[in-house]
Amino acid sequence: MGEKLDIGGVHHVRLTVTDVARSREFYTSLLGFEVAVESPPEGDPNAEAAYKVLFGGVVMNRGDLLLGLRPVAPAGDRFDEDRVGLDHLSFNVASRQELDKAVRLFDERGVSHGEITDLAGFGIHILPFRDPDNIQIELTAPMA
Image 1 (tube, rainbow, N blue to C red):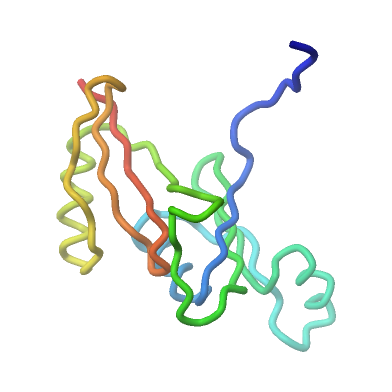
Image 2: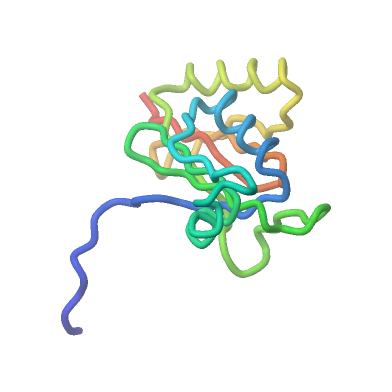
């Protein structure tokens, strides 16, 4: 078959969003990401150079994962997993109890979500939900 590249885990994911402040709040307050790098404000001498990398957005981290938000989508645009590109993003949690906790937290904060589903063939439970731009996200817990 030929030579293959020796790749490791995912380094980072960047999502295109409509409102960076709204999305930053969602990912930091609900999923525990912390802001690592913020775009400089307009008028800052570094703003133009930073725009080429950050696009006016932000980079956050949680553990080893970097998650970037790129606020260049037109207002009113909505994610659609049936178009070419991302289908969904899944984050690991430690247990089924964490999924139950997430359901309670989502209900308290008005975040719409699906049901916890058992995927016995994969040995996992999943809980799907959506971010403010309708990007489908899942929490995935191992079955005991």
